[in-house]
Amino acid sequence: MAGIRSVLLDRARRLGPERQKLIRPGWQRHLLPGGVAFVMLALFVYALDRFGFGFARIWNGLERLGFIIGFMLPPDPKGNLPAFAWALGETVAIALLGTLIGAILAFPLSLLAARNVMTNRIVQFMSRRLFDGVRGIDTLIWALIYVNVVGLGPFAGVLAIASSDMAGFAKVYSEAIEATERNASEGVRSTGGRRWDEIAFGLLPQVMPVLISQVLYFFESNTRSATIIGIVGAGGIGLFLSDTIRTGEWQQVSVLILMILVVVSVIDFVSARLRFAIIGKRG
Amino acid sequence: MKARIPLLAPERAAAVRGAYAEAQRAKRLRTLGGGAILLVLCLVAAFMAEVSPVRFAEGIPRFLNYFSNLVPTLSLANFRADMAEWYWGINRWTRLLLDTILIAYTGTIIGTLVGGYLSFVAAGTLNGSKWLVFATRRLLEFCRTVPEIVFALVFIVAFGLGPLPGVMAIALHTIGALGKLFSEVNENASLKPVEGVLSTGAGWHAAMIFGVLPQVLPNFVSYALLRFEVNIRGAAVMGFVGAGGIGQELVTAIRQFYYSDISAILIMIIATVMIVDILTERLRHAIQGREGQ
View 1 (cartoon, rainbow over the protein chains, first blue to last red):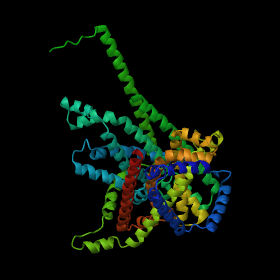
View 2 (cartoon, each protein chain N blue to C red):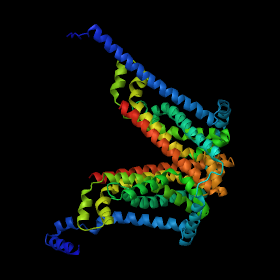
View 3 (cartoon, helix red, strand yellow):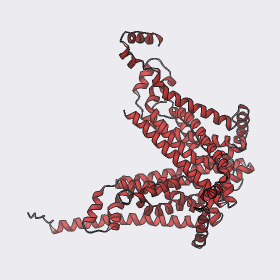
View 4 (tube, chains in turn orange, brown):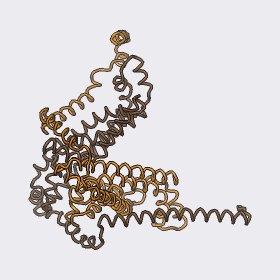
């Protein structure tokens, strides 16, 4: 290494300052990346200090974590399996209904935010921003609010998922709509179709495969969200999960986690197959 | 100019028409079948999720009432004082919100570094050991499938209340999410530089650092920035279970029906997420722009 380096540098020295600069750029080149890295590192260290990362605390915590993992084995539902299975079914039901309601309600909204449908720029821009804003609210926050509005139970969970999805769907729908070709809509208009005919027969068939595959994506991610909204009392398996963790029933915790892992991967698999079938068939 | 379109012979036309009708019917049947399955699933789901139109109808006025309560009383004449009353806790909330951002930041950094390392191990094209690739992939899958709030619940028992378990939970989830994305990027990287580095007698780590990392770094940074935005949303609810940040205040406000506090904190969270969203988008475009030159 060192030998090659010195030979190259020696050659470079003979090239004159202009060419030398190309081979060995000055220190200025490293200023920006170095500065950014330094600031990031400083912030990181500050955060660790602020949050009380200390070797003793981490060590003790890891030790306790080791005990907890030991307590988790072997997984044992302690006779609660039927209740767990029902709660898991409830979780999937919440995800399914929430996704569908969100997907349906989002469609008219997405038209407002699509540049090629909504010709009023202000409305289009404002609705886009609004969706971004609503998207910033986590499903768990929605769940907590809906528990206050409709009471404890899975219904609050359905509404929470639908609400947080609506904005996300509206955003991706409007992007899909903006990516469509004008030809079909113009064709419909040339035969005397009205605005709604253009949307129904020119636009919708083009975006339908994208829409359906997005719905499936959201369903996958909502199954994950639906497993935790029970923590705030909005139905599903989350209630059992937080209760068993709080009371230290670790063997049941590991059963619940395993059940979640299985259901999430089954749903991922099925939805990937469906997505492939739909896109493959029509695309 | 007139052009004659030659008509098909009647028997050919009939055959085509028949085939068309057949295809139409099959398609309709498939759509109907899919719709019927979906409908049945929805009914079962509605039963399981205890959806009741009556309760929904009852809920509507309460819903409207709730959201109108969220709107604070602001008047133009007394705007400054009204704002001050609405945001009476601004100092405390700002501090907690900064904590939230810091939780997300620290979690993202740890997750990116560890996930980045594991992504090389999990890349089938870069790692010869099939067994190690398989094991790492399953580990990453576990980390990203278990929700971060569940990790937080467990870590709170092990490490005590506060932002620390929140950081660790977010870090662990980020390892899973980014590790997978990164390893896909790694698998698309060209192997020629790797061979070049290996041919000089360098070890595996050196080959990854000098052969692969320069190729994939812009993508890594881009994904990490996206993840940072997601993590801010995740960190905002960490306080729900006692893992630090603004969530604790929000959960108290919602549970105690402090309406104006709810809207004040929500607006702060939304604004933070939007600002971070815009900044990271700018940054990503800047990085991609530099890359393109």
